[in-house]
Image (tube, rainbow, N blue to C red; front, side):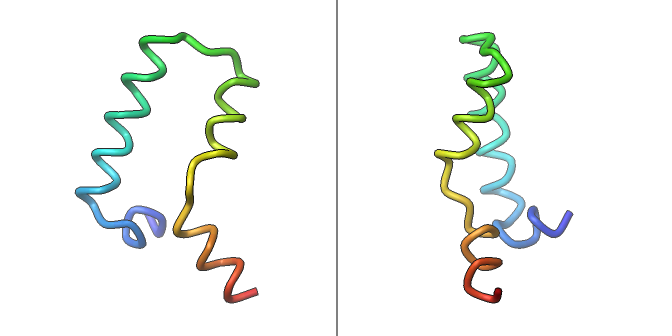
Length: 52
C-alpha cells in the first residue's frame, strides 16, 4: 500500500498493466522476472536509499 501511495494510483495501475502484459506475452522464468524487477526503476527504492 505504501508503494502505491508513493508512486500514485494511476502510475501504479499503468505499471501493473504493462507488467501483466509482459508476463502474459513472454511467460518468463522466475529468474527473468527477478532480472526485470532489478532493472525497473523504483522511486520508492530511491527514496529509501536517500533516507538510509
